[in-house]
Image (cartoon, rainbow, N blue to C red):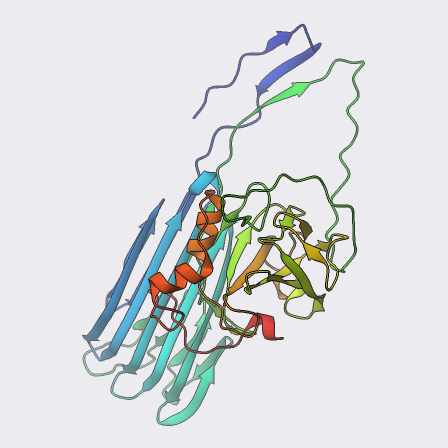
Amino acid sequence: MRAALTALVVLASGAVLATSSGADTPARARAQVSVVAGSIGDFGTQIARGDGVQTAKDVAVDSAGVVVAQAETVARASRAGGAATARAASLARHVDLFDGLVTASVARRTATAANGTTVRGGRVAGLVLEGHTVGDVRTDHDYLMSDGSTVAVNRGTAALTLILAKPRGSVPAGTRVEVAVADATATDAVVATPTATPTPTATPAPTPAKKRAHRAKRKPAPEVPKRLSGQGYAFPVYGNATAADDFGAARADTGVHEGNDIFAPFGAPVLAVADGTVQRVGTLKISGNRLWVHSTAGDAFFYAHLSAFSPDAVDGRAVKAGTVLGFVGNTGDAEPTPPHLHFEVHPGGEAKPAVDPHAILVAWQQHRDVAPGAWLTRHGGDTAERPGALVEVRDFIAGE
């Protein structure tokens, strides 16, 4: 903890520096996953803290009446630049609890954390309770069994939770079994700065409250230098921003997350990443304020959840890399989340499948270009398996 600063007299400005307004707090990020957890023990648990990645594939569990034929997990944590993010995902296949009392073909849970907020998702497919088919469950539900046992689906950190009301063989009543467990927390760094007490003659003007914009209003675009390197690509958000590695995360409305969320302050400028034309500017229920950029190289980039558009956000408008198109927000289904830009990369055009853009975004942000075509060639195309993506359905947010 930093000691309080001794008060100093600043003759040049006529202001007095008071004691520090707080202490430095480092960024914290943590992601934890388990295939099975609860009273019978934890299986397949992975924890990533600070800056780290933990992944596992082909995990199997067969203990005390709990069977998971195959599972995979990923836990990622990052504190880059003091902006903390964490991502956890657990996928269990062919689940059988206590000889058919509860079965499911798939149980999946995800957690994505940034700016002190955690967003959870998941689904259970092929759910069968006591021989009765329930099917696919994408929202949270509670079920009561004939013997008084309870089953919770998509609740808290677990995709599937069973609490026994009566003994099952050697397993006592009250036993709790959780399947596909994922949790994540992330808190940005806080840097203590001294507060200035003005002289009696200095009256600071009040800072107007920033209003959230949920309609496609337009405001003047600030002058923003282009963050370009040799190939002419720009990172899509200007200023302090962090791209979450959340491609493939479960989404209740759209199935699978087909882009990366770039977290940044509300109102941060959103930039065209390449020379091209602006297309399909508008507002939709899920995407909120959204648009496309079709590059001169034939690729397409999708932007969503903008708080507002700039005057250059007009269908058919030719833009250069670095042109301000709008501003970061949380419109559409992103209202409960911290402000961010949903960003997708579609090599070959808008009708082509989206690819995981994280490596591309990191390269752009570090002033190193990665051409989408070359990146696809190195990684085997969009059909290659990506650890942690857990992609099972193709339902694009951009296709709304």
